[in-house]
Length: 371
Image (cartoon, rainbow, N blue to C red; front, side, top):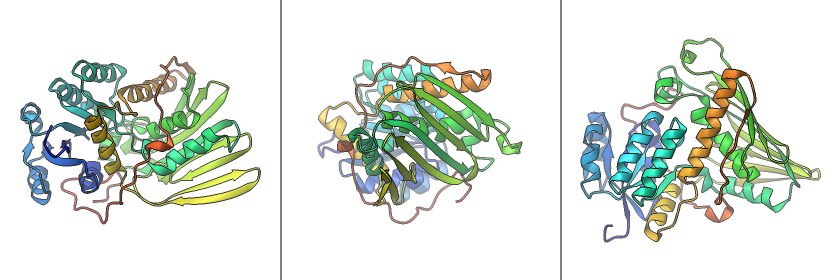
């Protein structure tokens, strides 16, 4: 560990999200510093490293093992395409380097298990980047439901849609793209942390408008998750519809609507209705990625287990694979998921100032094709 008691990170993968959200976040993460970059694009490495303070070295994917053994870093933040998560996470763990990995954790359950095993064997921290587990508006939603204000929670419903360009990796099946993997996972995870439980049975169906960009993945998917106590969660996610990001949880006495529920930045609004009376609250924008770095670095420095653990990531991947199986068979699929000892609570909220302005992107575009 370095003398400054700051965790030194390598950002692995320099796509749109890493450049637009992760790299700027280090300015607001006081116990974390950006020490190295990893990419297979030499132009990205050269131009981004010139603009970023504190970066000591840059590495290609082929030089990743050299980075891990260099002593330059304490942790990696993995922002690679989904199919590469497992390999890069396991290699980091085996080198004694802590791992913060973007979601979905991996493409298969076996890959998730391998990541968990490697982290445990080598005594390193493994956290999956569920940024909403640290975000105030979502955590307040958890506390509202837990408090009983809306009565017994019975129904969760969500819509998460956006337009995705044809050449974006999100519509590339071979790298782990698809609506469930990339955005449906937010709806699944929200249902789980709001119900504070795991689904016991799931059903899903997909639809496709026939556009060439959806030749490998479905345009949209709708799902039903049955939870213990006959509670139902439903959601629809799409790569071919206008930008919407909302959820509603309905109880026996009232309901809570959150909009936008899953956004990386911007104000979030709560509309809470209890016994016919409605209250509204607006939560200001925060740097959610800086909060992740602050939280994970603190877990490393204080030797604490992160709440959004590998087990959390594994459960979501297991649910997604069950939903895929339901789509293939047209049947409900039963689940037997492990119990979670840790779940996000209001005490985990971390607030950092929002990122100002938009960084110049190098060889990257957002999913909607905007540079």
